[in-house]
Image 1 (cartoon, rainbow, N blue to C red):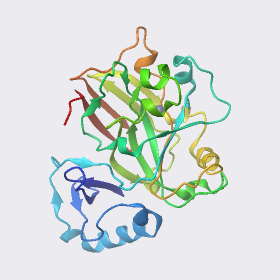
Image 2 (image 1 turned 135 degrees about the horizontal axis):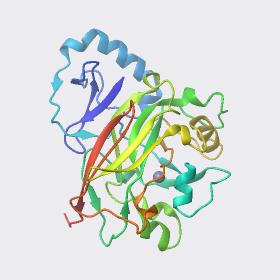
Image 3 (image 1 turned 90 degrees about the horizontal axis):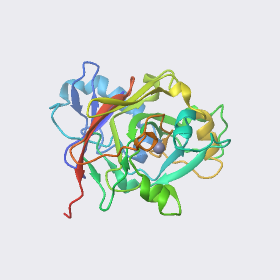
Length: 286
Ligand code: ZN
């Protein structure tokens, strides 16, 4: 299944993308796609319910705004330097253990919402990433068991303000957590739809110019190991997101570096998972 949430920010309703590509409102089944839904039998129940009730699910216009496909996310755990060529362009070694950092959940927004260049930012950068959504609590799980804890996948643009992240001391979290720095979607694609998450092309364009074009086959640490590893240090809860890292081709790695300015359009996608786009806008007090 391909789960979406649609409507105004903060007032989204749950929906599905049907086999024929139409968006359907499934709010008659469930008020929202939250942790309780994902952690229980929600996905299977929804599939069964939809098969019987599809005809009564209103069609949602394709022009409707999409929100992030899940709500109530308790944490976003990001993996840094998880593609070898990206580590090199960042001037860092390929890590021998996963590099973990958090991203504030307040950065989450819809997949096609504008990205706000933060106040005093000069170095807002892009990072296409495959995001894994946890579907079952994970604490001290083995690598062999890890995939049973996955609900599905989304596209994530791990927007990063490089000065905040790298030049102002402390942890990376400051450069990763600005409002709108975590667009997610367009859909939560359930695990059964992606037989091999380690062979997916992922790409990103800025103003029609291809900047990143790689494949998840190049991940340094693969998804089962990441879930196993992270679960040694924290309890992963349904709805939690693991962002698996970005490949080569970020603005920081260019000579000279290139960063986003208001008006730029970023389009990104992952094969089988979906595509989305964000237009960069300047910060304004609202
Ligand atoms: Zn990243």
